[in-house]
Amino acid sequence: MQQRLDAEHQAQEKEKLAQREDELNAREKALAEKQDAVAKSSQRESRPLPTERATRTDEHRPTASYDTFYTQLDRYGDWRETSDYGYVWQPRQAQSRTWRPYTDGHWVYTDVGWTWVSEEPFGWATYHYGRWTRLRNIGWVWVPGDEWAPAWVSWRKSSDYVGWAPLPPEARFDRGTGIHNWSDSYYDVGPDQYCFVETKQFDAP
Figure 1: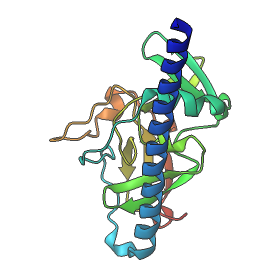
Figure 2: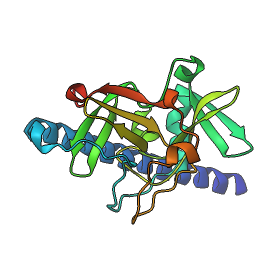
Figure 3: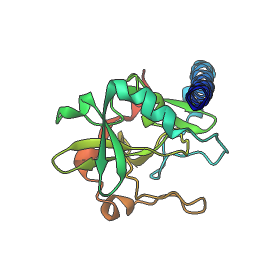
Figure 4: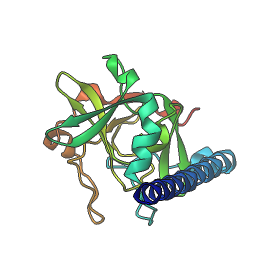
């Protein structure tokens, strides 16, 4: 009798997890379709350049299930346990010293601001939930989080160039003040973590 109850419980849990994954995948697909539509209809002059603060939306968004992250990301990298952040995930690409987050993809301007559209199969999670940090002797790792944003980055710009870098978990967003310029020095976001492109090429696919 107990074995049958255990089996029924496991089946129910698997069904719930599958439903959560389907819901999350549906939301990400809807977002991608919306981004494509906006990108095609928007004129370039109506797209303001990013300001020097974190990209984030204040709209309410559904939270993500950590179980979904563990299940979906496991095939693309490895989970590690750390003393500072608990369990973190590292993509196999991060084994190369030249790899950085927010480099394989492009920016699309949407109704929630500049949104990162990744070409990497894990990008739906790691560039919209959680944060990235670089650990000594390990490299770049992703720290799970349940709050959605179009991207979690620090911006820098000049008249000719636009740059962005991943924000670490310690950089908290404040609705009133955002994240200011001093975040780079306070959270140790170095110049080598930034990716810069010419302003005229910023939103190119």
